[in-house]
Length: 292
Image (cartoon, rainbow, N blue to C red; front, top):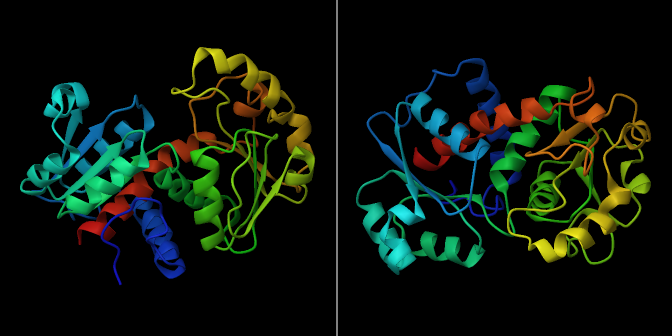
């Protein structure tokens, strides 16, 4: 059955997930091959700062023949107390789909409950499915397949790590997450959890990291985070401990010298800028699936 929303990525079964990546690859090769959103509008609600998400969704919707309507909270009645339920009812009368980049997952779930059009999670505190879809496309481009690959994530067990663990397992990956005590994911089916980054990257085809201090972390917690996560830096040494031909991944923005070294971020073994581009293609495939 075709999914009606994408809140965590678990709405897609394994077959649909592989079909999504196949379609994303086709749309990357031929960006104007689809007019699935011709004459239609997609509302994009941004309650968090964004570069890659906003650019990739806006350009992707345009390439599908649609109009991206960007709504910042301060420009809407949400800033004056209007409920997300009422916002869902109103937007559903005008647009083909709603994307939202926010904090609480409960807010996105409430939006989806009351909307009559597809709702896409563009980032929440717990999940970042659109990033994981792009990462799967990047891995398939790099290795020609997904089944049997090992992905190691090192650093803060955040929303990106969670989505990689959940969606990666569904795509046939082995996902290992290395994080210190207090920063590790909760147990996720199929994910290997460890506090040893070298154990995580052993035999890994890709080594992934994300920022240590995110946009919502308080300044008081930044120093503690930096100290706890320092041993988990994605360096040339750590990448060398992975499988031969392993690649480095990062969802960006990056802070060279913190979670990743400059030599890895801009080195020959990274596929980070491919990831950033692949957000557009994977999201176009998702919009086609949800809005068909």
